[in-house]
Length: 251
Image 1 (tube, rainbow, N blue to C red):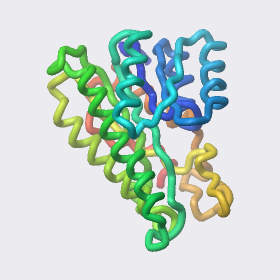
Image 2 (cartoon, helix red, strand yellow; image 1 turned 90 degrees about the vertical axis):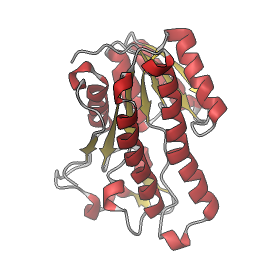
Image 3 (cartoon, rainbow, N blue to C red; image 1 turned 30 degrees about the horizontal axis):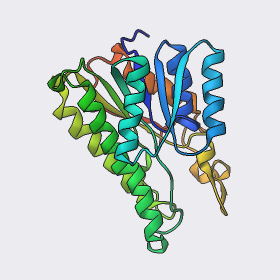
Image 4 (cartoon, rainbow, N blue to C red; image 1 turned 45 degrees about the vertical axis):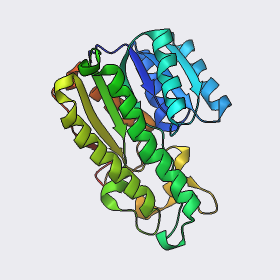
C-alpha cells in the first residue's frame, strides 16, 4: 500500500485503536505524533514499541478538547517532523453508561466536549495547517466514529451514540468543504472491538455479552481498525472522501 504522508498526528494514541494506528503508521514510514491525556505509562509503552520497531514517534500530553493543547500538539508535530500531512481524529470516551434519563449532566458534558468539540477543533486545526487555501500542501483526515451512531445504543449509551452521529456529520460536511483544497476527510465506524474501552465499571466486559456479538461471530481487533485507517490515509484511497466506513463485523 503506497502512501505519500509523512508527519501524522493521532489524538488519543496511547491505548486501544489509537495506539494500534500509531504503531502501524510508524511501521509504514510515518513520523507519528500522538496525544495522551494522563496515562503516561501507556504512552511510554506505545513509544517504546514504535522505537523498537525502528519507527519515529513522539507523545504529547494534553486534552484533545482544549484549543491550546490542540495547537501545542500540532506545533510539536511540525517542529520535529515537518508540515502536517494527516490527522487521525481518534480521542474519545464512552459514557455515561445506562439509560439517558439517568445520566449525570456533568458526565454527558465531558463526553460531548471530548467526542464532539474536541473532534471539531482538531479537524479545524488540521485544515488550517494542510489546506491549500492556507498555504498547505493538502493531506488527509480520518475521524474515528462508531457504529453506535447507526445503532443508537439504547439502554447503554444513547448520548455517546449521538456524539458519534455528530462525527459522521463532521466528516461529510468537512469533506465537501475542503475537497478542492487538497484534503480528504473520511470516517471509520468501529463496532465491537477488543480493547479495554469495553470494560464498563460496575457492569463488566461488553465482550462477554452474547447479544452484542456481530454476525461475524467475534469482536474485531484494534489492528483491523488501524488497517482501515491507514488505507484511508494512503494514496490508494485518493478518490475516497466523505466516506463513512463500517468496521463492525456486519452490525
